[in-house]
Length: 403
Length: 137
Image (cartoon, rainbow over all chains, first blue to last red; front, side, top):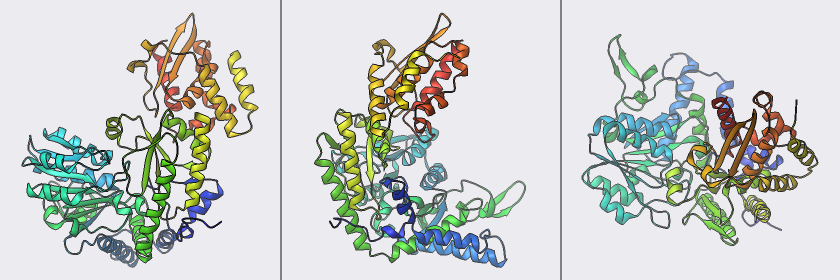
């Protein structure tokens, strides 16, 4: 029998075969992805051919490392179509990029100002703003969702107003798998002169996005979800918005002039990259982007859509399965009537199905839905319909035992 | 060192298990045998923090012997907790201190349930038990 949805890219990811030999079916790519051979080669090449620090030394290894590091910056800028509109800052993850914003922009806020986020934010795009609001006596405004898991634009139009100083929203929910109406939200925020931050941690992985067309001031994502190494995050900042960003962490080559009692600092991007950056990982991210750029983008999007459809249909065909929201792409979260998600997770784990269970770092969202947790199946370009068949078989077996 | 009768029974049952299905079914059976916890004990103060499910644990030192009771809204963790209580209930304070609980779960073939990445809560339950025994000496 031929497979319904094969992945032509599966063999490019050596870990998938290894996991399969261990009877593990990896369906947790929204947490982190497996890596292409091209990335493994790039990191191995860097370490085998002479590691060196960047932006410091005159020697040849230093020049090579700096060149490769800066090439990655250009590749990220191209991936986002940043052009000359802004700068790419490397951070240690999406979380640290959002924290950089919440501290670096703090001086712009006065008591009573409002920060607007949505009800579906990952803790990484909730807690930095929540804590900033506490430090500065600001109001954190939460945009509600419709039943489909999409931010309610009518409500947003009422809640985004003259006191709004900043809007920070996810592009694609890590729990509900729904694209968010960024353009409308960004337009509303801009009309009131507010800064706009997009958490692209999930969105960046699916399709291509153009930060100039989006029109946001800041766009954040993490490398490890985009088939790159961990320990690297990306902050795109529009030039005008970056002028507002104050230096946050200090040390290393972010300094221009230092005295015992005073110092001056570089502008973006280097001024926001204190300490030695994760050089090998940044170079590895560049290799992952080269690999992704070499793929037929339309074929990838079509594959992901076909797999997602397969997953969604299979789940909906099963008795008692309740899908959270109306996921568009990438993932499906679900609960089963009368079955505790922890029990289901236990039995799926026993059968080698690697999915995520629990609150998915979005506790307030799950609480609002009156759920203690949910199971999330998430997809990547290396998954195929056989992976999903194994999952369905394990799910049926687990439900059989639990009901 | 004394091993409670219940623990001996658990050990025999789990060591005879061949497949993951059998082990899972047996865990659920042990969970079902766990005596119900009174509603007034299912309160926030008795809730174990750090579990994906709700787990309540209470413990009292009665006549020099520990008696724990517990409950959960999830069946697998209830089974794991039942196996834990089978091993520790009735022990004296010094006996309880000497029990190697990770080894106990290893003997049952359940050591994976204690790996650091597991958020099912068994680790949190053990921690809570330790806290209870420390504060009630």
